[in-house]
Figure 1 (cartoon, rainbow, N blue to C red):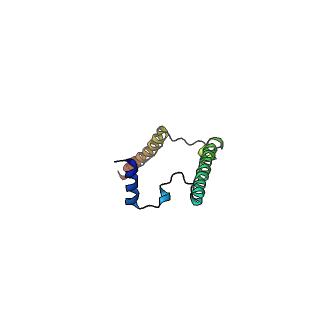
Figure 2: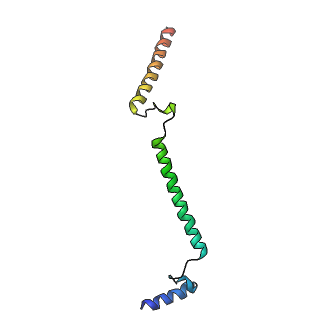
Figure 3: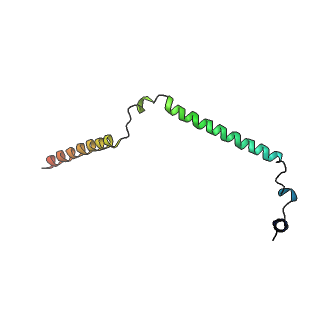
Length: 98
């Protein structure tokens, strides 16, 4: 089957307007405006993300956050201190009960 015949049959089956298949036709006004809005929206979003990343790198940390350490060693030390104080209380309670 010839490609021209195939496209003609497809046009008949789908029943779309003739200008739909015209790829060289200029875009509609709505399409052009929509494309511009999406483009500038993406550009503004990218600029906003860059500004946020620069703010993370440049601006100083808050006083409470300067000495924050999220390592596991300090977490384990804090837990062991809590556990030690709890076990000492249990020993004192056991002595009082005797």
